Length: 238
View 1 (cartoon, one colour):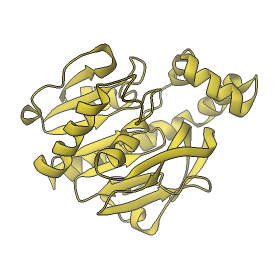
View 2 (cartoon, one colour; view 1 turned 90 degrees about the vertical axis):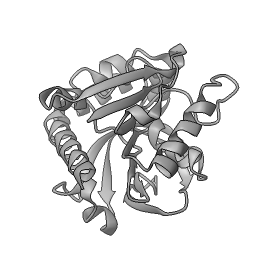
View 3 (tube, rainbow, N blue to C red; view 1 turned 30 degrees about the horizontal axis):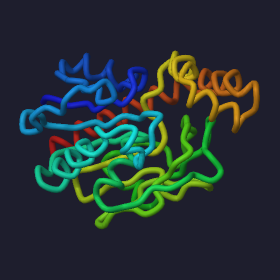
C-alpha cells in the first residue's frame, strides 16, 4: 500500500498515526499544499488522508491551491473510488468538494469534548470496537452544515450534528482529531490563528486548560487512534 497525505500547515501531520504506518512499513508521501507543493499523479497511490489546517474551505482567494485540492478529492472519491480519510479541515473539504456545504460552528468547539457515535456509526467498519461515547480533542470554528449526497452520519455532538461521516463506501472523515500526540497542543498553540481561537473560547488560561485535558486523556486518545487506523486498513482490505 502507498499512502498520499495532503497537509495544509507543517504542524498538522498524521501525528500518532505515523507510528502505526512505520510499524506496518507503509510508504507515505506528504504534500505540503500551503508551501506550493504540487499534487502528484493520484493513480500512483492507494489511499488518501487529508489533514487539518487554519484556513477555511472558502478561502480560495488567499489560498488558491484549495481549488485543485478539492478537484483532486472529488476525483479520488467519485471517480477513482479509493479509500479516503479526512480530519478536521479534511472533513470539511470532503463535504465541500462533493457538493455539501460548510459554515460557522456556533459556538466554536475547542477543548476536550464528548462525541457520540450514531446508530450507523456503531456498526460502521471504521468505528468497530470503539466506545459509543468518546472524549476527543476539538479545535474548530467551522462545521459541515450540509452533508453531500450518499452520506451516512457516523458521529455527532450536542453542538455539531456532523462530527463524522462516510460518503459512499470509500470515504470517511471526522471533525475532531484522532491523531493527537503528547506534544500536539503545545505545537498547535504556537499557531496564531489556533491560539487566538483557543483564548477567545476558553479564556486567557485556555492553553493550559487544553494541555491538562489532553494529558489526562492521552492514553485513550492513542488507543482510539490505533483502533481507527487498524479499522481503516481492514476496510481497505475489504
